[in-house]
Image 1 (cartoon, rainbow, N blue to C red):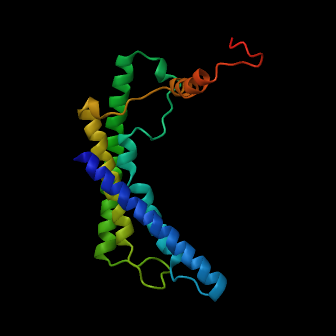
Image 2: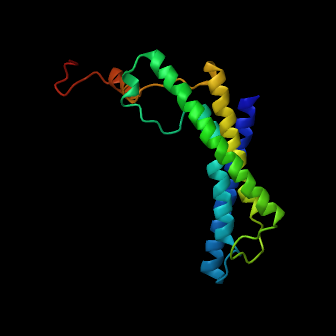
Image 3: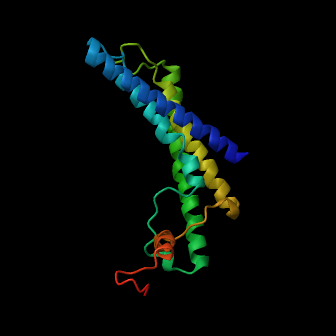
Length: 184
């Protein structure tokens, strides 16, 4: 079920990215050929960028694609690595949980005050974009919590060296000839 939710969130993000591209494209065409652009095109793009960045963070967590620096820790015993991963998840849940809470408060205030985006020609409200931040961060926290509780939910990590060797293994095994043609 959690994977299905991830899929829907990623699909939504993809659609919003496509919408952002379409708005930009139409605005450029309008500005170039008709001397008129889409009103608030930059504002729409900024608000859609929030969705594209924050919504898929939980999915990125589930596949282990967030940046990691493991130069030192990859040489530790597996037990210590597991403890460090759990500690990182606890710190992440705490930090991003607080960010979720505070960004939700800001979104709620924008909704209560009916705040309009600064410089908006179309009087676009701020709260929809601000509400996407706690949604994305909150889902990310859920994903981290699931990985903390269920070890099997954690992505299988490989070192960059292992990935590089595996990537080049297919190349070298299929191409065993050397410059002198001996294969040695």
